[in-house]
Length: 358
Image (cartoon, rainbow, N blue to C red; front, side, top):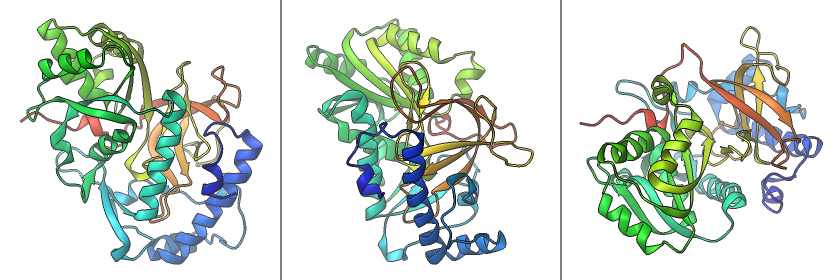
């Protein structure tokens, strides 16, 4: 099976056996591609004495620590084919990852995100309220994960409106006009978790202002560290969002700059889901062996999308646990899991954790 074959079927339709077979073929092909085209990646595999001629099970493919993308410029296509360079977020003074994308990679990321999100909201384009500032779009060639998320999510919307001004203040009049204009339509909203909390929810609470959206869906992504420091969990976040914005169905999702597009969306039962385009393996930190269902460990993420850089099998700095496979009450096939947060020694990261008001 190829990536194009996957695009012909629903994104959560493959059971474990079907998906394992599909990913095994695609990921082994990607491993061979990057081995041939990326010298740094080839040296790593040679040092591991990894045989690329064989078709290995997904769990046996070599993973790269995600931090390598902060230290090296890894790409598997000539420089002249690079159309975008994506940078991860980082606090002041931290190194950032650089992810080199060619046209094929950008197209497949967009297509995959479209397939995943459309399975939750349908194919129609909805009025879109972006809970961010338009200033994030300034540089389209060297763009951040936050900017990429804004641009990527815009494909699902029409009449896109930014809720925040350049100083990160909520434009109450503009937001009110947006809700009034689309009061009889379903509405889509998108933003980064902490920024929604700090610059939308908390700002509206301080002003004692509420809106009354009748039929809205909010997708949000980003680090939860600052919210957890304030004792705000997902239930409290959702409750306070709905208290200020109205009848809003809230979907959290998880992703990373190094594998943009193959996101993991939280279902109606609070479980993060792997789509047909991605998978998760939990590794024991003591020896990196594969953990069992229900066992906490380091998260390894697999994605069929990275063709222009060797990011298809990555070991993250997040801890999680697999809750089950193919049997979530929501009906979606594939693994579903829970994220416990960053490992204690990891750098602070996350698109929404890094904004500082100046």
